[in-house]
Length: 181
Image 1: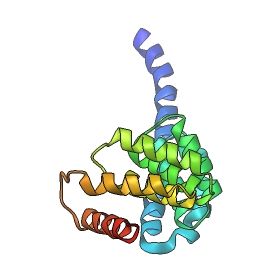
Image 2: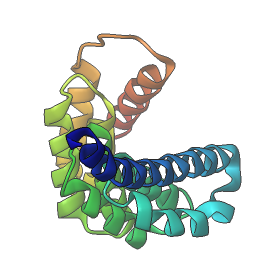
Image 3: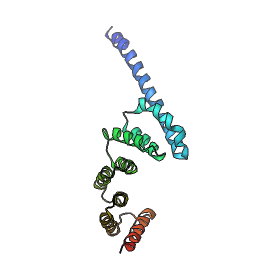
Image 4: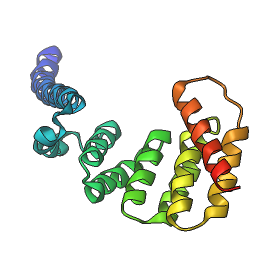
């Protein structure tokens, strides 16, 4: 008799749990599809679908980051910033700091942009991109001495893993320093 009572209560609970999980799985599958479409250059087309999925996946930091990055890709910097700030409440990593910094830079909020690039640099000190972007921030604000000083840091920074991007950054900074001497 106890087994029948347990089964009687467990069955509806299990059924509801399965329905909720299936809805979550379907939402994640839709997200995967629209993320791939966005990567293939159809970001504008899929933005309404991102907005619809936010109700189901808005508590997932990776979804919020991905949605914010898609918004930034098409120049919706204010919306991208809002999505990234929402993501930052539950998740913080190097890539998110770069997204926040880039959005602030595009919105000409240079102090906030600088703060997020510096935070990204603290999170991953071996990376070159935060320093490289800081040069842009400093030049945009007329802090040319700081831009040149940052360029010197980039040139002297040891390379852990060589890549064409790092070579390009270092060459650009050398050119910048040569021009200003």
